[in-house]
Image (cartoon, rainbow, N blue to C red; front, side):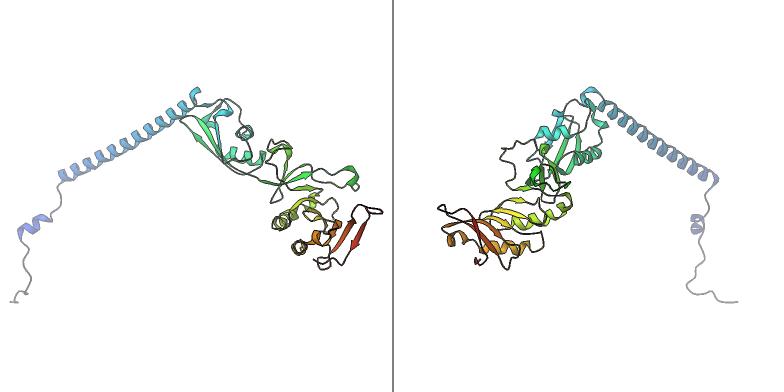
Length: 302
């Protein structure tokens, strides 16, 4: 007879009892408990759904009552504007009054503001208490006044930009954009006359260059594409056709700051920088017998 293996013990009666299967009554009770929990969970989910739906409907109903209407532009709060008045921005918002606050589409209004006014960015939000719209804008900043070209300066059917404003990126804006009068101190000081639409794309580079010029530039005449003319603190400057040499031309002009001192008895009629390496100066003699005719001095030193 084989000896029992060491370490193995015969299962006890208690261990056999612990792993015995559940009775049918216990299984039935457990299934009923699970069903009851499931019904409670479904009931709670349905209750939450109907409560949320009811709350949403109540909010929508309340928001469409007269007290939640945008009755006039006075309920549009404007911020971020410096050149445009609050009234100007309010009038740019395309709403028909009265308008239910919850029916307003902020993103659509923001896009329409960009299309309707001198605005580069717009954000529109709704506010319930008190009911109003909050509009935050970023404006286009005009850097030059576009003046009309006289009939005598027009060449054939040449088209020029209409009177208005240009920003630093070359975007044109009508004079009515900001509701400013011709004597308003907010108008840009720089004047531009005679820019053709096909040359408008060069304006950002031109403006960036002249804004860095140490010599003050007050006006630009570009009605003749073959000669860009500047009105500067030193006098009228001819640059010839616009080219990437503009930076060098203005650097040469800066070197000529002492020109009025060198020509004490004469008046500078114009400075020709079409070739910045060989500048020339046309002068007008001081008043006197036979004076008044300009003379060219190509050897004027910068």
